[in-house]
Length: 242
Image (cartoon, rainbow, N blue to C red; front, side, top):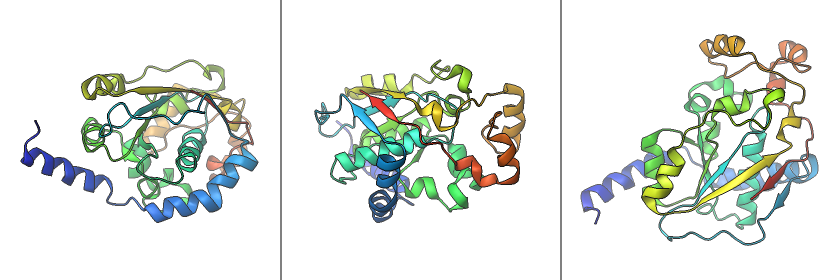
C-alpha cells in the first residue's frame, strides 16, 4: 500500500505537470480550430475505434502507442489527440496527454509561431521516466507515446514505415501498473511533407542549433525564405488504425 507521504509526493508532481496546462485553451482550440483542420483538411479517419476503450483499472491510465510514418511537423500526434478528445466528449481526463521530447518545450523555435509554453498548455508532458511514472501513478489522464521520439519524425520519406530504434519504457510501465497498451498504426502521415529525405549528418548539425531536423526536399527552398513553412503540412488523408 502506498504511504500518505508517497501519495502527497505523487500529487505534488502531478500538479507540477499541470503547471501550464490550460483546459479551457485546449477545448477552445479543439472546437474552433483543430476540429476543422482534422475533418476538412486532413480528412481524418479512425478505423477500429468503434468501441470506447475502457481502462483495465479505473485508477491506471491506458497507454496509446503509435508510430510516426514520415518526416514532418508532428501533425499526426496533434490530430490524434484532438480527435480523441472530441470522441471522449471533451472529457480532459480521458484525452491522452502526450509524452513529448523535452526539446519541444525547452526551445521556443519548436513552438508554433513562438507561442510561449504552447505544448505544455495543450497538455504535453516532457518525456522523462519520472514524468511517465507520475502520469501512471496519478491516473488523471490516459497517456499517448510515440516511442520512436524525434527520430521518428526525422527518418525521411524513404524510411516512412521503418520503425526507428525506440524506447521500451511503455512496455515496462504497462507491466508494472497492470494496464493495457493500445497500439495505433498511423498511416499516410508521410504525405504531410512528401518526398523529403533525411541526412543524419545534417540533423546532428541542426541539433546543435536546437532544431530537431532539417527536411531535405521540395519544402527546403521555401523554408529558407519563409521559416514558418516548418509548420506547413499538405492535406494528407490521416488514418489511424487500432
